[in-house]
Structures are given as structure tokens and as C-alpha cells.
Image (cartoon, rainbow, N blue to C red; front, side, top):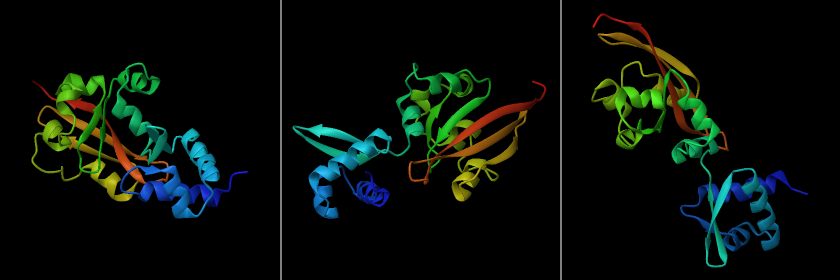
Length: 189
């Protein structure tokens, strides 16, 4: 039987560790039997909350920041989530807390260039040709509040309707923001 309190202790230990940790180190630090620790690690792994890497015969464990965020970072064109976002007519991007671009869909690539060239750059520089975060940036608002936000940004040729939503990790902490951009009003060219 799985004890939620013990499961949380194991996850918290892995999450707060500065580097991947060996299962025997977890057992020792939390004063839990090594076999019991292995059982909890297996449960956390099956829930997608931790991952491991083999070093010889041993496993070292690390937290998974967010399964959906990992999906975007992997950018596997065969993944159904990536396919769904790439099929949208609206532009979509994923931003980290420093407003760096982590991922963009095909529609965003049409307007701003390939993901490989955009990844890691500041959104305000790439999308708005600004040197600082936009004054009414909904992504900044979402990072500050942890809630959905939206804003209109007027450009000379059109208006951008931007909606943002938080992407949270397994512990409910804000990991990134998904931003959906729709051009709502085109001006004369």
C-alpha cells in the first residue's frame, strides 16, 4: 500500500536536490528501507513525476518539470499534442519564466522563422521587435498571477489578440506559459 505522505517526502527530496540522486541516498536521507524507496520511485516514475538515468547498474533520479513541457521541448512531430498545436490557424508559443522561446507551432514559424532559430531568444525581441517586455504583456501577467491572461497589442498593420495560460509542473508550480496569438484586425498594406 502506498502512503501519500511517504510518496510526497520522496518526491520533495528529489525535487529539492541540486543534482540527480541515487535511490540509496534517498533511502538513507529519509530513513526509509531501500526496497520501499524503490517501490515509491517506481510509483512516481509511472505517474510521470520523476525520471531516471542509469549509471552502470545504478539509477539516479531527477524530477520531471512538466510532462506537457517535456513534450514541447522534445518537439516530436509524431506526438499527437505537437500535431494538434501545429494544425491550428493561430500562432502558438511556449515561453519560460525569462520570456525565452521554448517552442513555436508551424503557424508561428511562418511569421517569425524556424524554431531552431527562435529557441532561447526573448519573445519581445522576436515577436515585437522590442528591447524590453511589452507594457501590457499577458505572459508576464500569467507568470505573476499563475492565471490566464489576455491583451490586445496594436501594430501599424494589425492588432494582435494574445491569450496566455499557465503550464504547471506535477507539484502545481508554474513552469512555463503557453501563448496563443490571433491577428484580429488587418490594416491596409
